[in-house]
Length: 481
Image (cartoon, rainbow, N blue to C red; front, side, top):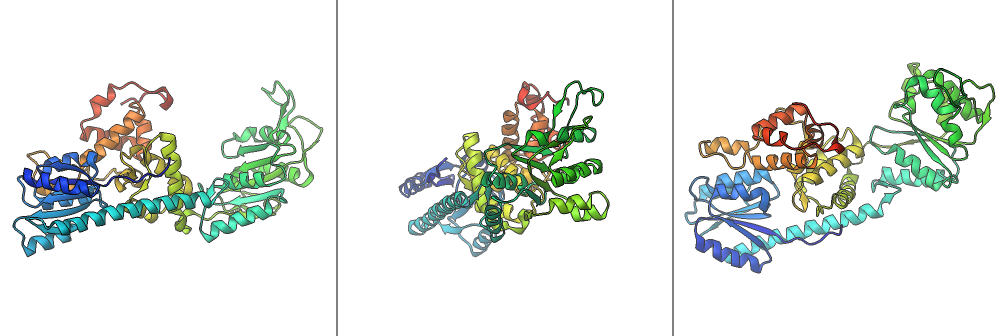
């Protein structure tokens, strides 16, 4: 979906109708979409829907004060700017406003030249951000290499090595942590190699039952064992002339490792229950997230097989060691997820980007892709915010549920520390609608345990209404509560 220039949004909060009318007319001339509310409670209630880029808030209002509204907005969305205005300006309140994160502090009657400067600054900042998002998206396309994206020197060196090796290699060992893209490397080697017109067969070594490994890889003759009612061609024979990708090769049982070594050395397989060897011509790419040298030392992996596989070794760096690639990966994942989900998400806010850059990413690129997809599902505007990412950032078992519009009997001080709950409530409702009420699937998307989700549902008063929804067969059987 192409990146389009968005209209900046201003929220005006004042209980004087004349101020609302004048500011609205003034801001619209500067290209702003304007919403206005007459009290702090009304402003916080509409905040998740309006998602203002900047709010102009009166300091003295009944109920919640302008400082209370400022703090709640800055907690809910650190990228949303707040300008305070008052008819009774004091040095103390100005200092408090700036310390609380206000963009500026204006006295009434308003200095419209100064207000113009502030609104233009916000508008230009938004345009700059969108230009940067457009650049990141373009760079991500330019630095994409067979499904992998990397501008970092580490990834550029890897891409160059793949190009040079692909036409010649028959055996490659691809090492790297889970989620770094080992299968993408194998497919790039295949697509750039001389066997690209032949089969590419993938074997997930961690998913095959140990007793069936030999039969899966090498096939079996009819009657070779109980249940072998027909002769079966193994995956090596099936890939003859092409490429076999052994994913998680470190999971291979020791007994099968010796037979795999024979195939690599002599190019022949022997079906289970057959005395006749068969010649095969197969390129073998193997991947592992284990340290095979340590596995050899521990006696869990054959040293002769390791050295046979280790003709050429390609190592993928974890995402935490190439953080400069995160903005470009994010831009690509946002573009793909938005197109697939048919949403007008164009990128992420600066605060959200800092959250992504600061995370450890134990699951690497796969984890980042899943986090962005989940955030796109939750996102209701054009930009993914920190709150859209927060369910993926922690399990929230111990987090205090936020509350944007405190009940009348809740003290303001308590309400301020609890934040904006409708944001979280809306996220939960949206995901439950996506999963048609299936709590197991919803908890997975939100990054919560099921127990934590049930606590959230009870806290937000959603339990009974959600339980009445019908299950979606695509998400599995309905939950039992």
